Length: 302
Image 1 (cartoon, rainbow, N blue to C red):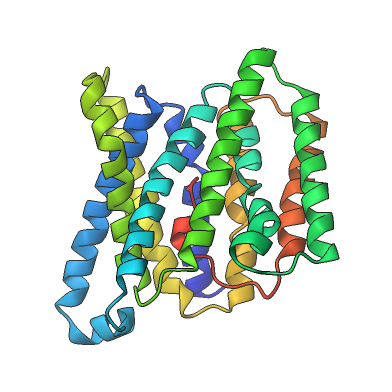
Image 2: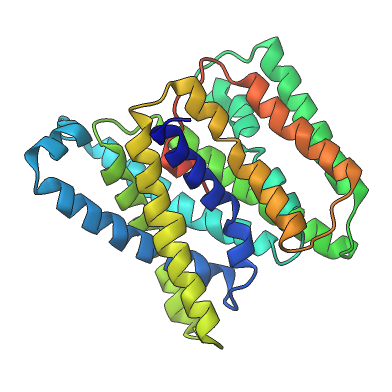
């Protein structure tokens, strides 16, 4: 296993463990998402400044043309979508298990397949259509198998996770319209906008209370390690790995999230939920055509 593969593997495992940390932070999902965005953007901003001191590094980042106004607007909107995406995903963990929330969240690539004929003018092939049907069947298995939570909690959790998946899908689509912006700069702007779209709500509530040093430490880890460092590891490895390898390694994120949910959080997980999860993830993998390296903004467990 080469160094680049190890970097991506570590990044995916970090993103897969997001739920474990979020579940142990005694803040509202909006506040958690806000702090993740602001701390992560500050970290990446520092990395960008350091890299820009070295002209060679600047060339490696991408000596691109000036982005159009359209790209800038789309970039800002996608960043806002990322912030709201985190809120819904983190909120789903309040009602259902991290494993189920993450699996429903990974319907996003399937949603992209379904709406791509409308927004991206891509043909909906038979293989992709079957993938969408199979993914929906997997979701039904998860919902029908139930959990230890009430039906109301289960419904709220699924709705929140599905809303997060839709926002995740919108980011994937919007990203295709962003031109002439390197990955580090793109992610820095998106993380910053993710926090800014949540700032009014945080100010309005004016209720940020850390009830213990534990929450402060976990928030710092979430922003620095799970966001800043994980993104840097991912980006630094992208140029050394084949697109297909990165696409396959990307699914370590949801799989590890399920494992962490079961063994670290001791959350219930039935056989039928496992089958439903496997069907959803398999549908997303099989439906991929000419896999390309995932952009970091596509990761919300990241």
